[in-house]
Image 1: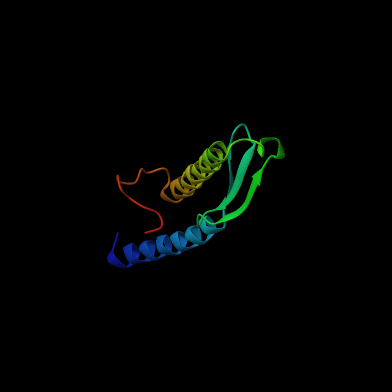
Image 2: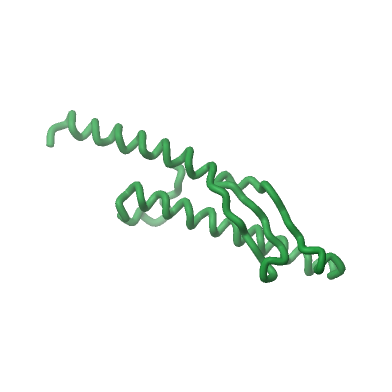
Length: 105
């Protein structure tokens, strides 16, 4: 393989990475807690689009509700990370990235 081929492959990989970054920003996941009594919709940018709290738990104490909201947010963050990792794996052909590798760069 000569240097020109290597540069072309690097450019293609960079283009794919750029598309993947754009796609990952638009992903939406649903984080839940309390068996679905609290849920949040989060984008790949970690922006919250919606928070839903079931009416049946509005009479609970404040600390309990805060814990459920925090747990739903944490669940959504984990799901965004898993989705991003899955998308990255499809780009790298399943090759594991080094520890500490963050996407996007």
